[in-house]
Length: 431
Image 1: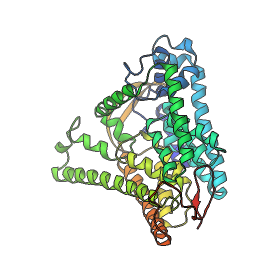
Image 2: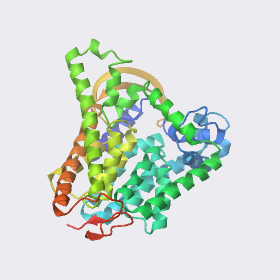
Image 3: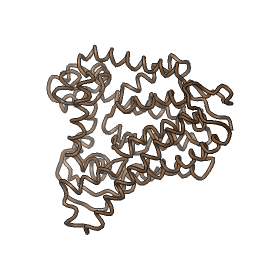
Image 4: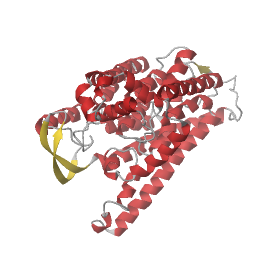
């Protein structure tokens, strides 16, 4: 990972821009933040921009920026609003620092390596380059599941913040229901709804109807940006779109190979999502057989293997895997995979075309290459291996739990189950 990071730095100073898997538009650095901030000040983010961000994103970007900079275009705001850039850097620093605390408390012997992997890993660097608010999501998730939050009130407030940063981060809250911690689940649900209503009142837009409509539009629009989807993805499914639009792959690859790839990708997605859902279902029956962090891993992965959340979303699942201890070969395999998908930078298989563009980071005109990167072909496979490795280990735990006692079909906890607390809502089975 250190070698990959050094290579990224050397390439940047040599060619003047960040190569793949960073986005091709080398003039778009930090624009996930500044586009959001622009619409936060302008309004009509849901009716005109058709965003799927929750209102909290616009509240944060509105108050963490200089409003005088948003009278023109978003790119102009980036040149003016230095407070926004400082806040982006602060999000990255906060993500690294809180990871260090969480890993140090979890396992001091591996804390240095895993913290470094997060700090210089491709997913978090990608989030930094984009200026992505997912860094706030990451901070909240680490605070929750790294056991850094004390007390039910603090837990509920942090969970509410996390759930309002990204739509799919509502799903991890249901791990509390699986663990039968109903009171805490209720507090988190009420807190999440309350924060949503408050931010909705502040922005005066972002109603459930608007969000649903924009989500439908988002899925259809993403089909038109296949190349960006393929570059840094958690799933092979975007590759299927190369066969039906934009790129005539059958003119260059034999039909039998393309057909075989289509069958493999379709089946891989179904089976991978199936094993994740199976583990979630078994966790309901045996809630103390696996940890809360692993339940959340399966909850996120059942979505990520079928729909790409963006390369920065990989940081969330890497953190959850890094909470594991390598007690056996299956867990060790998953941890190795987490390191592999965190290696920054990529290796080029083929150059497609070179385009002259202005690099914002270097401030000069450069020739940027559109390439086919090696990581785009192997990264989803590594993520699948990581999923199946932890699934196999979990199935062994469920088997042991089934032999030890009957499943928990009802809504109440089994009071006779031996457990020890590891933070609110994260009670685990004593070996």
